[in-house]
Length: 523
Image (cartoon, rainbow, N blue to C red; front, top):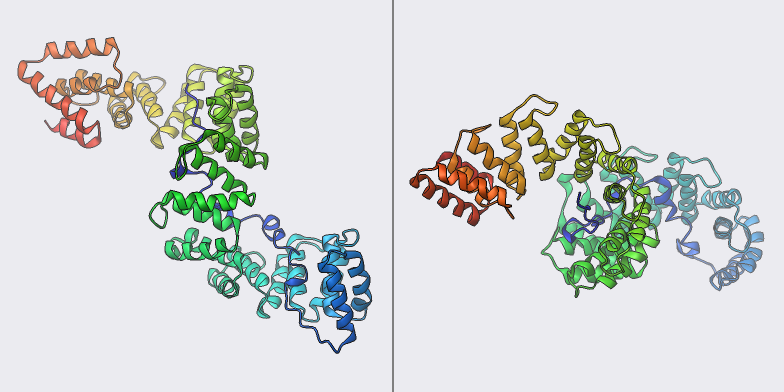
């Protein structure tokens, strides 16, 4: 049983785009926006003639200088006297534990007082508190209401968040048109997250709305402002040629910018570029360096790749034990490829004690996620009674799942079950169909076995020329296969042999495909 590859090509990069964007978890998404703006989230309109405003400005200077204790002392009496911006600032400081202990309840109290005076930044942040259930019971409807109050005043953060709530149907009825409207308003103010959300919508939104040029436009604007997710996605677009001609150099440039900001998925993707030498000189050591940075942040795809690096000894000394440790970390996060590979390590006793029952458990977890190699591996366990009682019906079930996804090894094994009638009604025609599918993908035994079926007239009309041609093009044929082919040649008339040789040459030139097999069938 061969180990499944832990390294994916750029064309199938696991973290090409942030597919979580349409429906991320509530807390993780809105928490990112919470209270990071401090007092810069709204315009600071201060009248010099107002002594309260003068004192507020002094507190603001303390705040900017990082002297949060003094800022609190200056703002508290102002806030108690009803100064909206001081109330807003005090609320932020309680929420962020600036100048004292964190107190979400007090944060909400002060933010609410400011919000009720139409302080847009306070309204937005109060909405975020409701969205995340901080200091108040979690309530998306109230979150949306407060965000809308700030959004209509032109607060770009609130406009962006309100767009996200409409996109997901959180606290409001889901409406993509309103999501786009609010994102456009914020994006027009240069808000990077809104630009990113627009790029995501046009790239990965409803199929009728997808527009690669628009997606690139908005991603590029956000990326130019340092938005790491947008930089990563722009890199992925250039890497895969998803909305433009492939440009590996540009892909590396944008992956690098995001990776240097610490974005794990970009570090993982940059590692893949170095590993394959795409857009940069090939460098296993640098690939592993970037994968390790991402893996240390808990990125499952990078942990899977670290496991693959230790298995192959590329970029690091070969070490099955280290491989198993990284694969286990990725597997525990539900990474299907890592689970499949970890199952194989248990099946082979590499880096872990040999344990067929553990192998079955990990194969099953990956198979249940639809990974065809794991479905095949699980079928093998049932087929041969390894780690589970032998169960041909279950083996056939899992072979079928993998075969339906086009996995040639499963197609061949399933074909053998139908050809032999192994716990299923014998069906030579079905066996031939499956062998053809596997043979057209270069499967060695399927190609030979298909030739045998033609030679014996099983599942297809007897055709010695086609049988001879197929066996002649078997990859790496063994002596027994060649002897069988020679016996076929001996049974044919000279004209048949000549035709068979011509057909074999055609298959060698054009390859075994459905088209070449159909032509052979018609002759």
